[in-house]
Image (cartoon, rainbow, N blue to C red; front, side, top):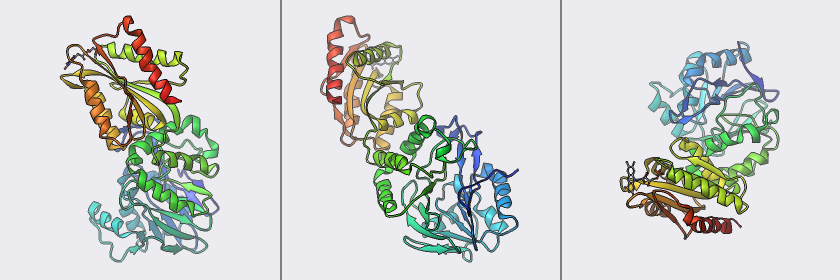
Length: 400
Ligand SMILES: Cc1cc2nc3c(=O)[nH]c(=O)nc-3n(C[C@H](O)[C@H](O)[C@H](O)COP(=O)(O)O)c2cc1C
């Protein structure tokens, strides 16, 4: 049974949903699944925009067969060579022997790396600024290197004013029939996953995302069709603003997130006491996470969202408690920067985690480490309430 939706008069979503995959890229948990989006442009010439993951081939074929109604595909535009989008290139080549692959030179090279295939007669190589007319529609190709991978390009359809955005503006989460942003409550149900997708997958490449946003600003875009998640056809500025903020590493909220790493619960108790102290001093919407039980991708997303981060950590074999060390190394790898950080540590004989955490923060860009640290010997005692209050106050002062 086909499962498609019309996006415009000529363009149809022929993508697929995956609610079976547990880990996207075999690393990110996706309890809400994911969609692999692909789009068919029915014009004088028929164009397919990317394909889908190998696991979704059967549904994908049913979708395109239905929309094609016996016609053949003339062009396959390959915007991104990650296997969740390119896995069906060979299948399309076999089914449509006259079909040309429209892609840039880097993409062609990757096709040969991934597949055993002869492309000489099949390639239509494009570069920045090139166009492809399919009849009423004209696609403009815009290179977007490292807006996830080096070969990435996006395509702008002049007629329907659609930006086919490759992985940009994507999100985790399978589509539940409602594929348009105005059919869902994006902010309530999708934003956290969109943030987690962006920050963990593209977060490192803020400079390249900024370059793409600048190029896109010159286009009259009425619709954004990403390779994952909903199609945007209204309120585009909401999502573009998020991308702008995330790629400039500006926090979305003046807010405090506490990440604690605790073996036996005493550092956890201190983190909870700090959260209460912050609340008493007027801070709202405080977030607290246990680094041992929270997926690091969720914490990265929260680090991008919040202006202030508290790291509270037990010392472990003379080092930083490993789940906290993992978070710190991910923060550095994904270029988390421009945050204010307060550090609290614990140790029963030589609490050194705090110093080591600060050293790691110094390796990141523009991190402001608050002067006052709080070092605990095994358990935080009531007699140190004033110290905890002062530790909280410096955070509150820096929030203003
Ligand atoms: C395997 C292990 C290694 C530890 N290594 C150190 C250490 O090197 N230095 C230290 O001062 N405390 C060390 N500790 C003590 C922890 O930091 C201790 O659990 C903490 O002081 C109490 O806080 P918690 O209940 O939050 O874990 C270690 C504890 C464990 C279980």
